[in-house]
Image 1 (cartoon, rainbow, N blue to C red):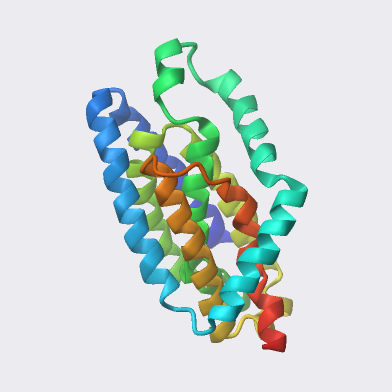
Image 2 (image 1 turned 60 degrees about the horizontal axis):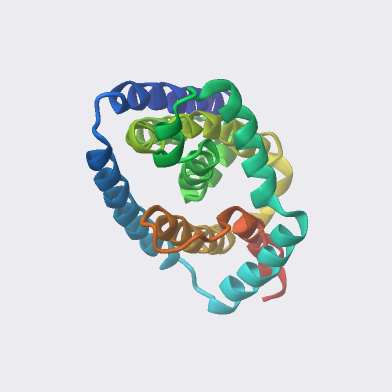
Length: 231
């Protein structure tokens, strides 16, 4: 778990740096940075989606995953959690509330960005199976810089993504002995593909082009583990 703890700490430190810089950034510039980040996330999403080898697995994962997400209503649960933290941590500034992204938005965007890639899965497996945290340490450096950039525009919600990374990567690390046989290169590529397509949806929301309930798509990321057994 050491690698996962370091990763979560790196995100918190990066987010703290980003929040510190956020105070001196004019609203117009922050909006332009948000749009620029959205374009970068589209690039990351499109690049990751090309790793998929079976379009049918992608389609089934998205359809079934969305049904599960909508049934459980993950989006509303995340928003409620975000509003809970928002009441306690965000300053009572009406202008800030109207113009700045919500804590839930920052949490969802950052969490997907940090958890979608193959590094999160493979690095966590390597930590659990061999005790080698080198890959997770490398990811931690990347996530720290990304968290600083995201927090400078998306705000405090990025902090809370460290908690999800801790749960997500920590679970893979602790369960590595049992799940490693199922996470073949093909499965990891398909999971990365599905997650990357969802990431494009996050980017479209960041650009203000859509209002997709992205969190309700998240269960789709894990369905390739089952679908690849039969397809």
